[in-house]
Amino acid sequence: MDTVQPLEILLVIALSAVFSFGGGNGQLPVIQARWVEPGLLSPELFSFSLAVTYLAPGPRSGFIAGVGYYLAGVPGAAAAVLGLVLPTVIGAAGVSYALKKMERLVRLVQPSSGFVIAALIAAAAWGTAVPLQFSPVEVAAVASITVAIVALDLDPVWLILGAVAVGLGWSFLL
Image 1 (cartoon, rainbow, N blue to C red):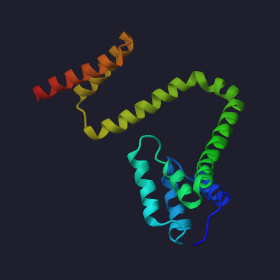
Image 2 (image 1 turned 90 degrees about the vertical axis):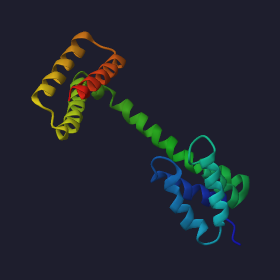
Image 3 (image 1 turned 120 degrees about the vertical axis):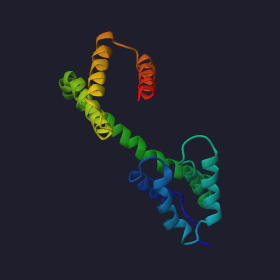
């Protein structure tokens, strides 16, 4: 049986991490194609490391350390974890650097950002409400409630409780 070197583990996991978003699931097909199908890692050990990760608390990419361990022992586990962490750290540093460079631009557009956010929320609410086919009375009620919320600066908890009460009352009237 061929052995897998820690450097290969580091490079393969790091490259797959660059193209993976949302955890270790992006590495699954890479690991299967690179090490399981050729027989360098048994399907049972691969499945076991994956199952243990899903049973344990924490990130779902923990199985990568198990894969590295089964391929090359403790150095393989370290290489796998390093291969997973390095692209994330480098990417976060790059984003942080870029945001720092754009700080002046962000301050410039910040005053108008509240209006943009309000417009996005309104567009999402409208897109959700249109299929419901509100009557003119319901639209007027929503508009008056919106004005009251803004005027009174209501806490969101009261808004939700009020919406539940109005919805229940409205359903009993119909």
